[in-house]
Image (cartoon, rainbow, N blue to C red; front, side, top):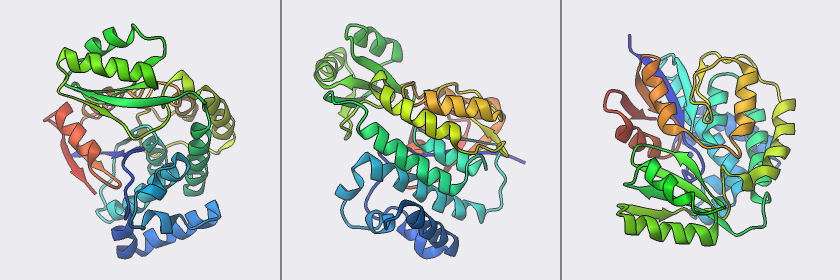
Length: 292
């Protein structure tokens, strides 16, 4: 029998109408959204199912919305009755992965992602941003950003896609250098801060308190944290990695390859959109990737 892994998308996957299809299809999804609204104290479903992307842009709305949406789609996956051996989530998606592993409760996931979004949105007053560099190696990108004091590699997404993060003016200068070096594409991301960098230090300190007081149960499968890219079932390791992830690098390429090392031949992306499926197809052709 083929071993299965699950992956969950992070911020940037949000879009108007997200989750509406599965909400209308499954009573379990409707129940989750009701619980989320009760936890948050406002109707986030109204924002998720609206016709405009604008209300979903604020980080403190996008993060819980993505978590809730992925949890709803997980109910659809459960109908397949296929056990999974390991889970991983891209950045924010790590909270969805922990919920799928049975490590955190749904309500704690909603609370933590809401607080994470709020903490990140006010972590720095500096003008910051992020950009995806496509077509250059990590070594080429590292050689450029080493010339700048406030630029960092935020995500190693695949062999040909790396995300950098940091101070806005330095980001613009570096992006021009990447274009001159022959990058096939440099895409400025629709964020107003510098995720996965020291600019998130204040958010890390705030979330450390929240994460440490939350109940983390032993996972029912392997969890592959972003910052270590090593499968684990140790709750203390998982908590530590979740805290470090706020300022640390998302090692997605290595995380995805960890599925292969575990003998996993099928990976399902759970949530809105298929960005991780597309990334996975550029990482390896030996793992079949599906979307729920």
